[in-house]
Amino acid sequence: MVFEKAGTVSKQKFRIMKKYSFKIALSLFAIVAVLSSCYTGPIYDPYYVPKDRQKENLYYMPSAPNTQLLTEKNDFDFNVMLSASSKFSGSEWQASFLPAKHVGIIGSYSFAVNDADQHYMKYNRFETGIGYITSVSKEWHFETYAGLGTGKIDNIHATGSSKVRLTHFFLQPAIAVSNEKKTAQFAFVSKFSGVNFKPDTAFDNAREPFSTSGIKSLYDKPFHVMWEPALVFRFGWKDVLFHTSYLISADLTNSDLYRANNNFSIGMSLRLNASGKKSNHR
Image (cartoon, rainbow, N blue to C red; front, top):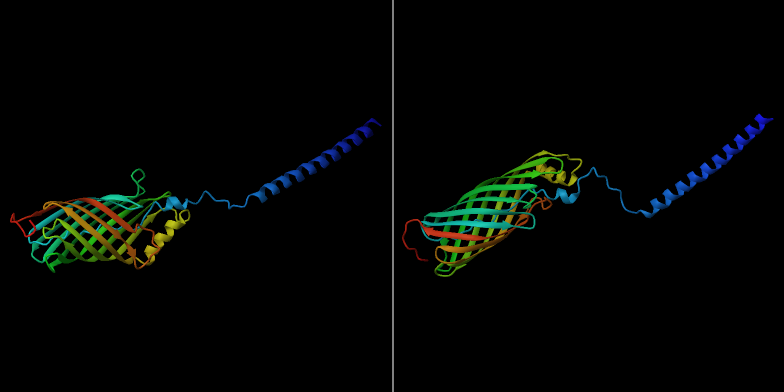
């Protein structure tokens, strides 16, 4: 009899525990369902790099126009400038020389980073050219330069790195107006460039889809045509001038390529005559 009563009690306890376990499980399911219905946003996988971080890396940057508006034989000009846009800051060195009355030579070097503290992108470029110069009148001046350039953009990605080498040729006509002493000059420049991109990547394409799409577009279309109109303003004294310019860059081949699309520069210019003779504007 004792064993029968003990067995009966155990069965009753089992039924009670089973009943309460079912109720607890049902309650937990209901709580989870309610909480889930309150959350309407997507669940982001931390595997993917945030798009804002991917946008710290650029694939093209325009340099300031190398337009120093020399007019006399043996004139020499050297510019040192700071340049910037919403996506980078840097510096530029430019030089030009007129070995003959209607012949000019130019050269420049550009350097920039995307941020003063976090150098996710570094850029440098060399450029040189030769041009034709003529004075339309005492106030109006026309010049056009053609040349070649080479550069490199190094990107540090969240998951690796990429390197984009650039080679380009350009045609840069400009028309300018100035006072008689050439101490105040204003010019409109229209630069056309054919740029060839050569990318090399070592980052995780799956984790950085935005960066991957940009690099892929360069593999698919490595040659781009750029149009870069600009305004140049120079003022000061016969040998030393303030120099400033603003340039807008348009990619006529792929407008979706992620890049810097403008350049504002400001700096100083030293202008001398190598022959030591006084020219018409001195």
